[in-house]
Length: 404
Image (cartoon, rainbow, N blue to C red; front, side):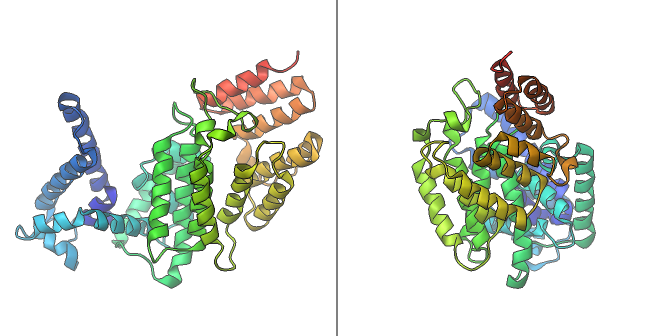
C-alpha cells in the first residue's frame, strides 16, 4: 500500500503516503468495530486508501510540493483520466512492480547502507523506530535522525522509482536482501513485542524475497539463497514455543513437527542458488540451517561441518555476532573450556556489550563447566538486558536449575 501511494505522491512525499495508510487503518478500526470485518479486508483497505489518495491528488495537483510532470503521473491531474489511472495503479500486478521498484528506490546509492536499510524497514516493512533500533543495536534517537535525513534526501533529489540496470543491480540488491533478512529475524526472535515469534513479519519477509525470486531482473543466486535460509528456519517455527508461550530449546524440540514441505522448498531454492561461482553469506547461513534441518537430534548434528561453515562466514563477512555464533559451534565440537577461551578473542566486543546473548552464552558455558556461581551472574545480566518476556522466563528456568 505504501509503495503505490508513494508512486502516486512521489518519493519526496513519504510522509503523505504514510499518513494515508495510518488514516486508512484508523478508519478500518472504527468501521470494523461497528460493522464487523468485511469479507475481503485487503480489498476494503485498498479501496479506502485509493479514495483518500484521490482526495489528496485533487487537493494538491497545483501544489509545488507535488510533482506530476512525468508522463504517468500527469494523468492524475485530469478528472478525465484520474479514476482510470488510479484503477491501473491499484491492480495487483502493478502493485507488485511498484513494491519492487520502491525496494530499490530505498536503496539508492546516494544513501548510506544503514540509511537504506532503515528506510526499507520503516516504509515497506512497517517497523517501529524501536524495532529498527533493536535490529541495529542502536538508540531510537539515532534511528529517527537517519529517517529524517533520508527523507530529506528523497525530497531534495526527487528520486524516482525504477529497477536498476543490470550493472547496478548487484550492489543495490545487497541492501534489499539485508533489510528483508532483518525483517525476518525480528519476526523469528522479537524482543520488542509480547510474542517471541511474529509470524506476520516472517510471512512478509518470505513474500518480499519471493517477489525478487520471481522477477526476471532479480533472479540472482543470493536471492535464492536467502529464500532457502528463511524457509529452513520457518520450517522449525512450531517446535520453538510451547502452548504456554515458553521457549523450547533445540535439544528439546519435537523434530517430527518440523515442516518437511518447507524444508524441501528451501532445498529447491538452494539448488537454484548454486548457479555461478559466487558464495554469499546467505549461501553459508542456509547451509548451516540445512544441517540442523536434516539432523535427527542435537547429538547427531554434524557440528564439525557447521563449525567449518562458521569459519568460512567469519572470513568473508566478519562480525562480532557471527564470531559469537561460531563459539556456540566450538562448544559443541571442542567443549566449553575452549569456547570460554575464545570469547575474549572476539573482535569488536563493544558491539556486544548490551547484547543479552553474550551473557546468556557465558552463563551456559559456566554451567557446563559446573561453575554455578558464575553461571548465575551471567544469566542474571542477560535477563536484565533482554526485553523479551519469553527469554526472561527461559533464563529464570536456567537459574532455577543451577546446582546450589
